[in-house]
Length: 224
Image (tube, one colour):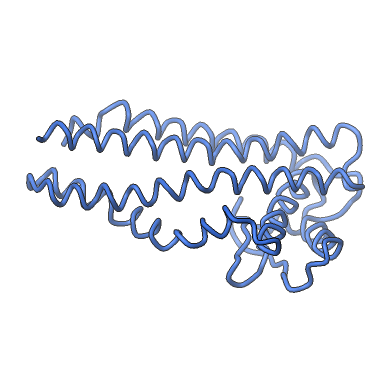
C-alpha cells in the first residue's frame, strides 16, 4: 500500500493541481486590483450579457466563499462569489462572463455540458467511494474490491475529461462576449490571462485523475 501512496504517478498529479490552484489565485488577486473601464460589477455584467443573449430565465446571485463561482443548470442560476459579484474589476468581469458562458451553453443544448450533467451522479459516487474501496481492497488483499473501486474512480475520471471542452468553450464564449464593448485595449489580454489560469486548474485536475487511475491500474496488475 505504501508503494502505491508514494508512487510518482500518484504524488506528482497532486503537486500539479496545487501549482495550478496557486496560479489561478495569483492571477485573480492581481486582476481583482485592476478596475475595468466599463465600471460594471460582475453581477451587472452577468445580467447584461444574459439579457443581450435573450436569456431571461437565468438568475444571477451572490454566493459565499472565494472563487466559488459557478452555474447551476438545475436551478438556472449564475452564482458569483461576493468579490466578483460586487467588484468592478477585470477578474470579476472575466469570471462572470465565463459563468454566463455556461448558461448560454445550457440554453443552446451544448452536448458536452449535457453529458457532464448526466454523468455527475456517477462521478460524485466515484470520487467518494473509488479510492477508499481501492485502499480497502489492497489492505485486505481483495482484488474484486479493488476492481470495483477502479470502476467507480474511472467514472470520476471521465467527468474530469468531459469537463475540459465545457470549460474551454465557456471561456471562448466569454472572451467573444467581453470583446463586444466590455473590454478596452489591453484589458482583453488581461481578461484572457485570468481565464487561461482558471483553465489550467481543470487541465491539471484532469491530468491528475488520469495519472492516478493509471497508478491504480498498475498496482492492480502487480497484484496478479
